[in-house]
Image 1 (spheres, rainbow, N blue to C red):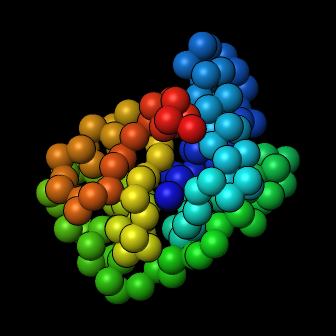
Image 2 (cartoon, rainbow, N blue to C red; image 1 turned 45 degrees about the vertical axis):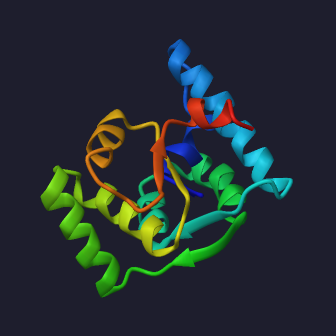
Image 3 (tube, one colour; image 1 turned 90 degrees about the vertical axis):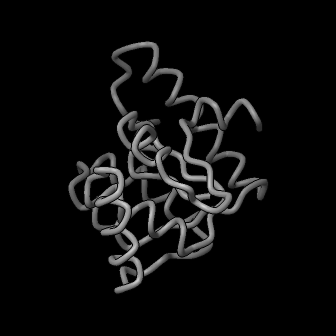
Length: 142
């Protein structure tokens, strides 16, 4: 499993509406399942880079989730090339394309994101058995 930056942050977001509340609970449940060994979590250099922009308080909380990663996918030419291909085909942002490429190279079976644009654009790709979905859908399968 690969989780986009917003999955790590969602449990600590201000819960302004029902969707954020439900996603926060789902993300927390997913991290509990990972802690219990029910799923393996893969991280990446792009994930670490994106956390540099997160507030220091939230970063402190998120760092405990990052320690759950069994592997970290480095930012390589292969990742950058695959990301450029995904961005060109779908219009994904560079960072989202790098997340997706990292997940593919890391052989994740699922990519979780709260970002509707990421979900829609990644859905245009054939990703060889990788599913991209919202944590609400995934947590219902736990």
